[in-house]
Amino acid sequence: MPPASDSFQRIQSIRAAFPEGGFFRDKEWVLSPSAFPLDEETVGLIEDLGPALLAFQSACNTLYIESADGKQHPWVSALLDQGKPPDLVALSRKKAWQNDLPRVIRPDLVLTENGVCISELDSIPGGIGLTAWLNQTYARLGDEVIGGEHGMLDGFAAAFPREDILISRESADYQPEMEWLVEQVNHRSRSAKRTVMNPWNITSQELNGASIYRFFELFDLANVERSDELLKMADAGELQVTPPLKPYLEEKLWLALFWVPQLERWWRESLSEKHWDLLCACIPFGWVLNPAPLPVTAVYPELGIHSWEEMKSFGRKQRELVVKISGFSERGWGSRGVFIGHDLSQEAWGAAIDEALGSYSQSPFVMQRFRAGRVLNHPAWRDEKGMAELVQSRVRLCPYYFVVGEEARLSGALATVCPADKKILHGMRDAMMLPCRLKS
Image 1 (cartoon, rainbow, N blue to C red):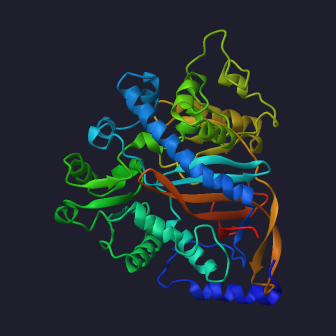
Image 2: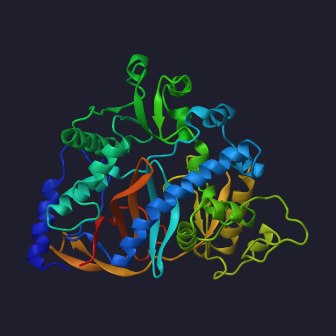
Image 3: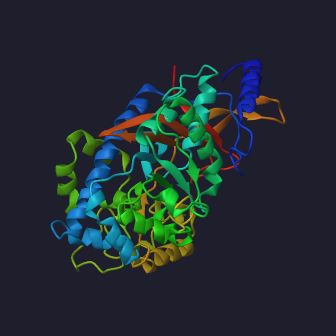
Protein backbone atom coordinates (compact mmCIF):
# COMPACT_ATOMS: atom_id res chain seq x y z
CA MET A 1 0.00 0.00 0.00
CA PRO A 2 1.43 3.47 -0.87
CA PRO A 3 2.48 5.70 2.05
CA ALA A 4 -0.33 7.87 3.46
CA SER A 5 0.90 11.07 1.81
CA ASP A 6 1.24 9.33 -1.57
CA SER A 7 -2.23 7.80 -1.23
CA PHE A 8 -3.77 11.20 -0.58
CA GLN A 9 -2.06 12.75 -3.60
CA ARG A 10 -3.10 9.86 -5.86
CA ILE A 11 -6.74 10.07 -4.74
CA GLN A 12 -6.73 13.81 -5.40
CA SER A 13 -5.34 13.19 -8.90
CA ILE A 14 -7.95 10.52 -9.61
CA ARG A 15 -10.77 12.83 -8.54
CA ALA A 16 -9.36 15.66 -10.64
CA ALA A 17 -9.36 13.38 -13.69
CA PHE A 18 -13.12 12.70 -13.56
CA PRO A 19 -14.68 14.20 -16.71
CA GLU A 20 -17.52 16.64 -16.32
CA GLY A 21 -21.06 16.06 -17.51
CA GLY A 22 -22.14 12.93 -15.64
CA PHE A 23 -19.61 10.60 -17.22
CA PHE A 24 -20.55 7.78 -14.82
CA ARG A 25 -24.29 8.41 -14.64
CA ASP A 26 -25.80 7.21 -11.34
CA LYS A 27 -22.73 5.11 -10.61
CA GLU A 28 -20.82 5.22 -7.36
CA TRP A 29 -17.91 3.18 -6.11
CA VAL A 30 -15.14 3.26 -3.53
CA LEU A 31 -11.88 4.82 -4.68
CA SER A 32 -8.50 3.22 -4.18
CA PRO A 33 -5.04 4.74 -4.57
CA SER A 34 -3.77 1.53 -6.22
CA ALA A 35 -4.60 -0.36 -9.40
CA PHE A 36 -5.40 -4.02 -8.73
CA PRO A 37 -2.27 -6.22 -8.90
CA LEU A 38 -2.25 -9.58 -10.66
CA ASP A 39 0.64 -12.02 -10.55
CA GLU A 40 2.41 -13.08 -13.74
CA GLU A 41 0.72 -16.50 -13.81
CA THR A 42 -2.80 -14.99 -13.66
CA VAL A 43 -1.98 -12.39 -16.31
CA GLY A 44 -0.63 -15.17 -18.55
CA LEU A 45 -3.81 -17.18 -18.02
CA ILE A 46 -5.96 -14.18 -18.92
CA GLU A 47 -3.89 -13.55 -22.04
CA ASP A 48 -4.36 -17.19 -23.10
CA LEU A 49 -8.11 -17.03 -22.48
CA GLY A 50 -8.72 -14.52 -25.28
CA PRO A 51 -7.83 -16.86 -28.17
CA ALA A 52 -9.50 -19.80 -26.37
CA LEU A 53 -12.79 -17.89 -25.95
CA LEU A 54 -12.72 -16.69 -29.54
CA ALA A 55 -12.26 -20.31 -30.67
CA PHE A 56 -15.08 -21.38 -28.34
CA GLN A 57 -17.43 -18.71 -29.67
CA SER A 58 -16.62 -19.73 -33.24
CA ALA A 59 -17.32 -23.38 -32.35
CA CYS A 60 -20.64 -22.38 -30.74
CA ASN A 61 -21.62 -20.52 -33.89
CA THR A 62 -20.72 -23.44 -36.15
CA LEU A 63 -22.49 -25.95 -33.91
CA TYR A 64 -25.70 -23.91 -34.00
CA ILE A 65 -25.57 -23.54 -37.80
CA GLU A 66 -24.97 -27.26 -38.37
CA SER A 67 -27.65 -28.12 -35.82
CA ALA A 68 -30.18 -25.84 -37.52
CA ASP A 69 -29.30 -27.47 -40.86
CA GLY A 70 -29.90 -30.90 -39.34
CA LYS A 71 -26.26 -31.98 -39.74
CA GLN A 72 -25.24 -32.11 -36.07
CA HIS A 73 -27.24 -32.51 -32.86
CA PRO A 74 -30.55 -30.89 -34.01
CA TRP A 75 -31.67 -30.56 -30.38
CA VAL A 76 -29.03 -27.84 -29.79
CA SER A 77 -30.61 -25.23 -32.09
CA ALA A 78 -34.10 -26.22 -30.88
CA LEU A 79 -33.00 -25.52 -27.30
CA LEU A 80 -31.32 -22.22 -28.14
CA ASP A 81 -34.32 -20.99 -30.16
CA GLN A 82 -36.87 -21.56 -27.37
CA GLY A 83 -38.81 -18.44 -26.45
CA LYS A 84 -37.45 -16.37 -29.34
CA PRO A 85 -39.59 -14.69 -32.03
CA PRO A 86 -39.62 -16.81 -35.22
CA ASP A 87 -38.73 -13.78 -37.38
CA LEU A 88 -35.61 -13.14 -35.28
CA VAL A 89 -34.63 -16.82 -35.43
CA ALA A 90 -34.94 -16.74 -39.23
CA LEU A 91 -32.86 -13.56 -39.38
CA SER A 92 -30.17 -15.07 -37.17
CA ARG A 93 -29.70 -17.84 -39.74
CA LYS A 94 -29.20 -15.49 -42.67
CA LYS A 95 -26.25 -16.67 -44.79
CA ALA A 96 -24.98 -13.12 -45.35
CA TRP A 97 -23.62 -13.04 -41.78
CA GLN A 98 -23.41 -16.76 -41.13
CA ASN A 99 -19.76 -16.58 -40.05
CA ASP A 100 -19.93 -13.22 -38.25
CA LEU A 101 -18.97 -13.16 -34.57
CA PRO A 102 -19.01 -10.43 -31.92
CA ARG A 103 -15.92 -8.20 -32.06
CA VAL A 104 -15.57 -7.73 -28.33
CA ILE A 105 -15.45 -10.56 -25.79
CA ARG A 106 -15.67 -9.95 -22.06
CA PRO A 107 -15.81 -12.86 -19.68
CA ASP A 108 -16.73 -12.34 -16.03
CA LEU A 109 -13.97 -14.12 -14.12
CA VAL A 110 -14.08 -14.89 -10.41
CA LEU A 111 -10.56 -14.83 -8.95
CA THR A 112 -10.35 -18.08 -6.95
CA GLU A 113 -7.70 -19.88 -4.92
CA ASN A 114 -6.89 -21.99 -7.98
CA GLY A 115 -6.95 -19.44 -10.79
CA VAL A 116 -10.13 -18.04 -12.30
CA CYS A 117 -13.57 -19.38 -13.20
CA ILE A 118 -15.85 -18.04 -15.92
CA SER A 119 -19.26 -17.08 -14.56
CA GLU A 120 -20.49 -15.38 -17.74
CA LEU A 121 -19.44 -14.54 -21.29
CA ASP A 122 -20.63 -11.15 -22.57
CA SER A 123 -20.38 -9.88 -26.14
CA ILE A 124 -22.20 -6.57 -25.49
CA PRO A 125 -20.46 -5.51 -22.30
CA GLY A 126 -20.73 -2.28 -20.41
CA GLY A 127 -17.64 -0.73 -18.91
CA ILE A 128 -15.59 -0.23 -22.08
CA GLY A 129 -15.41 3.53 -21.57
CA LEU A 130 -14.98 3.16 -17.80
CA THR A 131 -12.06 0.75 -18.20
CA ALA A 132 -10.47 2.99 -20.83
CA TRP A 133 -10.71 5.95 -18.43
CA LEU A 134 -9.36 3.95 -15.50
CA ASN A 135 -6.42 2.70 -17.57
CA GLN A 136 -5.67 6.21 -18.71
CA THR A 137 -5.95 7.70 -15.21
CA TYR A 138 -3.89 5.12 -13.31
CA ALA A 139 -1.29 4.85 -16.10
CA ARG A 140 -0.67 8.60 -15.75
CA LEU A 141 -0.03 7.94 -12.05
CA GLY A 142 2.73 5.52 -13.02
CA ASP A 143 0.91 2.17 -12.79
CA GLU A 144 1.76 -0.39 -15.49
CA VAL A 145 -1.86 -1.25 -16.26
CA ILE A 146 -2.75 -4.18 -18.51
CA GLY A 147 -3.17 -2.82 -22.02
CA GLY A 148 -1.36 0.40 -21.22
CA GLU A 149 -2.73 3.93 -21.18
CA HIS A 150 -4.34 3.72 -24.64
CA GLY A 151 -4.93 -0.04 -25.01
CA MET A 152 -8.71 0.10 -24.67
CA LEU A 153 -9.00 3.03 -27.07
CA ASP A 154 -6.74 1.43 -29.68
CA GLY A 155 -8.44 -1.95 -29.31
CA PHE A 156 -11.90 -0.46 -29.78
CA ALA A 157 -10.77 1.60 -32.79
CA ALA A 158 -9.22 -1.46 -34.45
CA ALA A 159 -12.25 -3.70 -33.87
CA PHE A 160 -14.78 -1.02 -34.89
CA PRO A 161 -12.97 1.06 -37.54
CA ARG A 162 -16.06 2.91 -38.80
CA GLU A 163 -19.04 1.85 -36.66
CA ASP A 164 -21.31 4.39 -35.01
CA ILE A 165 -22.70 3.30 -31.62
CA LEU A 166 -26.47 2.86 -31.34
CA ILE A 167 -27.65 2.98 -27.72
CA SER A 168 -31.16 2.10 -26.57
CA ARG A 169 -33.07 3.64 -23.65
CA GLU A 170 -32.47 0.48 -21.61
CA SER A 171 -28.71 1.02 -22.01
CA ALA A 172 -28.82 4.81 -21.56
CA ASP A 173 -26.82 4.73 -18.30
CA TYR A 174 -23.80 3.82 -20.40
CA GLN A 175 -24.24 6.64 -22.92
CA PRO A 176 -21.98 9.21 -21.19
CA GLU A 177 -19.04 6.82 -21.01
CA MET A 178 -19.57 5.72 -24.63
CA GLU A 179 -19.68 9.36 -25.74
CA TRP A 180 -16.40 9.94 -23.88
CA LEU A 181 -14.95 6.82 -25.51
CA VAL A 182 -15.94 7.95 -28.99
CA GLU A 183 -14.52 11.43 -28.38
CA GLN A 184 -11.21 9.92 -27.27
CA VAL A 185 -11.05 7.45 -30.18
CA ASN A 186 -11.93 10.14 -32.73
CA HIS A 187 -9.20 12.38 -31.32
CA ARG A 188 -6.61 9.62 -31.80
CA SER A 189 -7.83 8.34 -35.17
CA ARG A 190 -7.46 9.62 -38.70
CA SER A 191 -10.18 7.32 -39.98
CA ALA A 192 -13.89 8.07 -40.24
CA LYS A 193 -15.27 9.82 -37.17
CA ARG A 194 -17.71 7.79 -35.12
CA THR A 195 -20.83 9.10 -33.41
CA VAL A 196 -23.18 7.92 -30.65
CA MET A 197 -26.78 7.63 -31.83
CA ASN A 198 -30.15 6.77 -30.31
CA PRO A 199 -32.92 4.93 -32.20
CA TRP A 200 -35.55 7.56 -31.37
CA ASN A 201 -33.75 10.51 -33.00
CA ILE A 202 -32.29 9.13 -36.22
CA THR A 203 -33.76 8.91 -39.72
CA SER A 204 -33.79 6.16 -42.32
CA GLN A 205 -31.51 8.31 -44.45
CA GLU A 206 -28.92 8.44 -41.67
CA LEU A 207 -29.05 4.66 -41.25
CA ASN A 208 -29.00 3.73 -44.94
CA GLY A 209 -25.52 2.44 -45.74
CA ALA A 210 -24.34 2.88 -42.15
CA SER A 211 -22.43 0.43 -39.99
CA ILE A 212 -23.47 0.36 -36.34
CA TYR A 213 -22.36 -1.23 -33.10
CA ARG A 214 -25.64 -2.06 -31.37
CA PHE A 215 -25.38 -1.42 -27.66
CA PHE A 216 -28.50 -3.31 -26.60
CA GLU A 217 -29.50 -6.93 -26.15
CA LEU A 218 -31.74 -8.65 -28.67
CA PHE A 219 -34.22 -9.71 -25.98
CA ASP A 220 -35.00 -6.00 -25.56
CA LEU A 221 -35.94 -5.35 -29.21
CA ALA A 222 -39.60 -4.74 -28.33
CA ASN A 223 -38.48 -1.72 -26.29
CA VAL A 224 -36.11 -0.35 -28.93
CA GLU A 225 -37.70 2.35 -31.07
CA ARG A 226 -37.77 1.55 -34.79
CA SER A 227 -36.37 -1.94 -34.20
CA ASP A 228 -38.58 -3.39 -36.95
CA GLU A 229 -37.14 -0.90 -39.40
CA LEU A 230 -33.60 -1.64 -38.23
CA LEU A 231 -34.07 -5.37 -38.77
CA LYS A 232 -35.63 -4.89 -42.21
CA MET A 233 -32.75 -2.64 -43.31
CA ALA A 234 -30.21 -5.16 -42.02
CA ASP A 235 -32.03 -7.98 -43.81
CA ALA A 236 -31.99 -5.96 -47.04
CA GLY A 237 -28.26 -5.24 -46.73
CA GLU A 238 -28.85 -1.50 -46.24
CA LEU A 239 -27.44 -1.51 -42.70
CA GLN A 240 -24.46 -3.37 -41.24
CA VAL A 241 -24.92 -4.44 -37.60
CA THR A 242 -22.44 -5.78 -35.08
CA PRO A 243 -22.60 -7.83 -32.90
CA PRO A 244 -24.46 -9.95 -35.46
CA LEU A 245 -28.20 -10.44 -35.04
CA LYS A 246 -27.74 -13.84 -33.43
CA PRO A 247 -29.66 -14.22 -30.16
CA TYR A 248 -28.31 -17.75 -29.78
CA LEU A 249 -24.83 -16.30 -29.13
CA GLU A 250 -26.17 -14.21 -26.23
CA GLU A 251 -27.08 -17.22 -24.07
CA LYS A 252 -25.42 -18.56 -20.90
CA LEU A 253 -26.59 -21.99 -22.07
CA TRP A 254 -23.28 -22.45 -23.88
CA LEU A 255 -21.36 -22.69 -20.61
CA ALA A 256 -23.57 -25.65 -19.63
CA LEU A 257 -23.54 -27.19 -23.12
CA PHE A 258 -19.74 -27.30 -22.90
CA TRP A 259 -20.18 -30.09 -20.32
CA VAL A 260 -22.90 -32.15 -22.06
CA PRO A 261 -21.38 -35.63 -22.61
CA GLN A 262 -22.99 -35.99 -26.05
CA LEU A 263 -21.15 -32.85 -27.21
CA GLU A 264 -17.67 -33.67 -25.84
CA ARG A 265 -16.48 -35.07 -29.15
CA TRP A 266 -17.70 -31.93 -30.95
CA TRP A 267 -15.83 -29.59 -28.62
CA ARG A 268 -12.66 -31.69 -28.73
CA GLU A 269 -12.67 -31.73 -32.52
CA SER A 270 -13.49 -28.00 -32.78
CA LEU A 271 -10.94 -26.74 -30.24
CA SER A 272 -7.21 -27.22 -29.95
CA GLU A 273 -6.00 -29.36 -27.06
CA LYS A 274 -4.59 -26.25 -25.35
CA HIS A 275 -7.90 -24.38 -25.63
CA TRP A 276 -9.89 -27.42 -24.49
CA ASP A 277 -7.75 -27.89 -21.40
CA LEU A 278 -7.89 -24.20 -20.51
CA LEU A 279 -11.67 -24.00 -20.85
CA CYS A 280 -12.12 -27.18 -18.81
CA ALA A 281 -10.11 -25.55 -16.04
CA CYS A 282 -12.03 -22.25 -16.17
CA ILE A 283 -15.66 -23.15 -16.97
CA PRO A 284 -17.46 -24.52 -13.88
CA PHE A 285 -19.30 -27.79 -14.50
CA GLY A 286 -22.88 -27.00 -15.47
CA TRP A 287 -26.27 -28.42 -16.42
CA VAL A 288 -29.31 -27.24 -18.40
CA LEU A 289 -32.38 -27.34 -16.15
CA ASN A 290 -34.62 -29.34 -18.49
CA PRO A 291 -37.83 -30.72 -16.91
CA ALA A 292 -38.02 -33.67 -19.32
CA PRO A 293 -37.72 -36.98 -17.41
CA LEU A 294 -34.57 -39.06 -17.85
CA PRO A 295 -34.61 -42.69 -19.00
CA VAL A 296 -35.14 -44.98 -16.02
CA THR A 297 -31.47 -46.00 -15.77
CA ALA A 298 -29.91 -42.53 -16.31
CA VAL A 299 -28.58 -39.95 -13.84
CA TYR A 300 -27.38 -36.37 -14.21
CA PRO A 301 -23.57 -36.21 -14.61
CA GLU A 302 -21.67 -35.46 -11.39
CA LEU A 303 -24.91 -35.14 -9.38
CA GLY A 304 -25.86 -38.82 -9.24
CA ILE A 305 -29.60 -38.05 -9.17
CA HIS A 306 -32.36 -39.24 -11.48
CA SER A 307 -34.64 -36.18 -11.23
CA TRP A 308 -34.45 -32.52 -10.27
CA GLU A 309 -37.01 -33.26 -7.56
CA GLU A 310 -34.29 -35.15 -5.68
CA MET A 311 -32.14 -32.03 -5.72
CA LYS A 312 -34.63 -30.15 -3.56
CA SER A 313 -33.57 -32.26 -0.57
CA PHE A 314 -29.86 -31.46 -0.97
CA GLY A 315 -28.14 -30.31 2.22
CA ARG A 316 -26.39 -26.95 2.46
CA LYS A 317 -22.99 -28.32 1.42
CA GLN A 318 -24.51 -30.12 -1.57
CA ARG A 319 -26.19 -26.87 -2.59
CA GLU A 320 -22.93 -25.10 -3.45
CA LEU A 321 -24.54 -24.44 -6.81
CA VAL A 322 -25.74 -21.36 -8.65
CA VAL A 323 -28.89 -21.26 -10.78
CA LYS A 324 -29.27 -18.48 -13.33
CA ILE A 325 -31.55 -17.57 -16.22
CA SER A 326 -29.79 -18.09 -19.52
CA GLY A 327 -30.15 -14.83 -21.38
CA PHE A 328 -33.15 -13.95 -23.58
CA SER A 329 -34.89 -12.16 -20.75
CA GLU A 330 -34.87 -8.81 -18.96
CA ARG A 331 -33.59 -10.78 -15.95
CA GLY A 332 -30.62 -12.12 -17.89
CA TRP A 333 -28.10 -9.43 -16.95
CA GLY A 334 -26.67 -8.08 -13.73
CA SER A 335 -27.48 -10.19 -10.69
CA ARG A 336 -31.18 -10.63 -11.51
CA GLY A 337 -32.45 -14.16 -12.03
CA VAL A 338 -29.56 -15.64 -10.01
CA PHE A 339 -29.98 -18.02 -7.05
CA ILE A 340 -27.08 -19.26 -4.93
CA GLY A 341 -28.05 -22.58 -3.39
CA HIS A 342 -26.17 -22.50 -0.08
CA ASP A 343 -27.46 -18.97 0.61
CA LEU A 344 -31.08 -20.14 0.44
CA SER A 345 -33.28 -22.06 2.81
CA GLN A 346 -34.37 -25.54 1.72
CA GLU A 347 -37.81 -24.15 0.88
CA ALA A 348 -36.42 -21.22 -1.15
CA TRP A 349 -34.03 -23.57 -2.97
CA GLY A 350 -36.92 -25.82 -3.95
CA ALA A 351 -38.88 -22.79 -5.18
CA ALA A 352 -35.90 -21.68 -7.30
CA ILE A 353 -35.69 -25.14 -8.90
CA ASP A 354 -39.44 -25.09 -9.63
CA GLU A 355 -39.19 -21.61 -11.17
CA ALA A 356 -36.30 -22.68 -13.39
CA LEU A 357 -38.05 -25.83 -14.60
CA GLY A 358 -41.32 -23.95 -15.22
CA SER A 359 -39.48 -21.36 -17.32
CA TYR A 360 -37.76 -23.91 -19.57
CA SER A 361 -39.89 -23.54 -22.70
CA GLN A 362 -39.53 -19.73 -22.78
CA SER A 363 -36.38 -18.79 -20.85
CA PRO A 364 -34.22 -21.79 -19.90
CA PHE A 365 -32.06 -21.74 -16.78
CA VAL A 366 -28.61 -23.20 -16.25
CA MET A 367 -26.99 -24.47 -13.07
CA GLN A 368 -23.26 -24.39 -12.33
CA ARG A 369 -20.91 -25.40 -9.58
CA PHE A 370 -20.34 -22.41 -7.29
CA ARG A 371 -16.68 -21.46 -6.95
CA ALA A 372 -15.97 -19.05 -4.12
CA GLY A 373 -13.79 -16.03 -4.76
CA ARG A 374 -10.43 -15.83 -3.05
CA VAL A 375 -10.34 -13.49 -0.04
CA LEU A 376 -7.56 -10.92 -0.26
CA ASN A 377 -6.74 -7.42 0.96
CA HIS A 378 -6.72 -4.25 -1.11
CA PRO A 379 -6.49 -0.60 0.01
CA ALA A 380 -9.73 1.39 -0.04
CA TRP A 381 -9.81 5.15 0.49
CA ARG A 382 -11.91 6.27 3.45
CA ASP A 383 -12.92 9.93 3.24
CA GLU A 384 -14.10 10.00 6.84
CA LYS A 385 -10.63 8.93 7.99
CA GLY A 386 -8.62 10.74 5.35
CA MET A 387 -6.60 7.62 4.69
CA ALA A 388 -6.46 4.29 2.88
CA GLU A 389 -6.98 1.03 4.75
CA LEU A 390 -6.76 -2.58 3.72
CA VAL A 391 -10.16 -4.19 3.17
CA GLN A 392 -10.90 -7.91 2.90
CA SER A 393 -12.33 -8.43 -0.56
CA ARG A 394 -13.35 -10.83 -3.29
CA VAL A 395 -12.73 -9.90 -6.91
CA ARG A 396 -14.43 -10.18 -10.28
CA LEU A 397 -12.10 -9.65 -13.23
CA CYS A 398 -13.42 -8.46 -16.59
CA PRO A 399 -10.76 -8.60 -19.31
CA TYR A 400 -11.71 -6.96 -22.61
CA TYR A 401 -10.63 -8.69 -25.80
CA PHE A 402 -11.20 -6.85 -29.08
CA VAL A 403 -11.40 -9.10 -32.11
CA VAL A 404 -9.41 -7.85 -35.09
CA GLY A 405 -9.32 -10.29 -37.99
CA GLU A 406 -8.77 -13.67 -36.33
CA GLU A 407 -6.97 -12.26 -33.29
CA ALA A 408 -8.45 -11.56 -29.86
CA ARG A 409 -6.45 -8.68 -28.37
CA LEU A 410 -6.36 -8.22 -24.60
CA SER A 411 -6.68 -4.43 -24.28
CA GLY A 412 -7.46 -3.90 -20.60
CA ALA A 413 -8.96 -5.56 -17.54
CA LEU A 414 -11.42 -4.18 -15.01
CA ALA A 415 -11.36 -5.43 -11.40
CA THR A 416 -14.54 -5.14 -9.34
CA VAL A 417 -13.22 -5.47 -5.79
CA CYS A 418 -16.19 -6.31 -3.53
CA PRO A 419 -16.47 -6.72 0.23
CA ALA A 420 -15.58 -10.29 1.20
CA ASP A 421 -19.09 -11.04 2.52
CA LYS A 422 -20.58 -10.65 -0.99
CA LYS A 423 -21.14 -13.86 -2.97
CA ILE A 424 -22.50 -12.28 -6.16
CA LEU A 425 -19.71 -10.02 -7.39
CA HIS A 426 -20.82 -7.01 -9.43
CA GLY A 427 -20.61 -3.22 -9.49
CA MET A 428 -22.01 -1.76 -6.28
CA ARG A 429 -21.59 1.34 -4.11
CA ASP A 430 -19.28 -0.37 -1.63
CA ALA A 431 -17.05 -2.01 -4.25
CA MET A 432 -13.86 -0.62 -5.79
CA MET A 433 -13.66 -0.34 -9.61
CA LEU A 434 -10.04 -0.55 -10.70
CA PRO A 435 -7.82 -1.27 -13.68
CA CYS A 436 -5.57 -4.30 -13.38
CA ARG A 437 -1.78 -4.15 -13.44
CA LEU A 438 1.01 -6.70 -13.36
CA LYS A 439 2.27 -7.19 -9.83
CA SER A 440 5.86 -5.97 -9.53
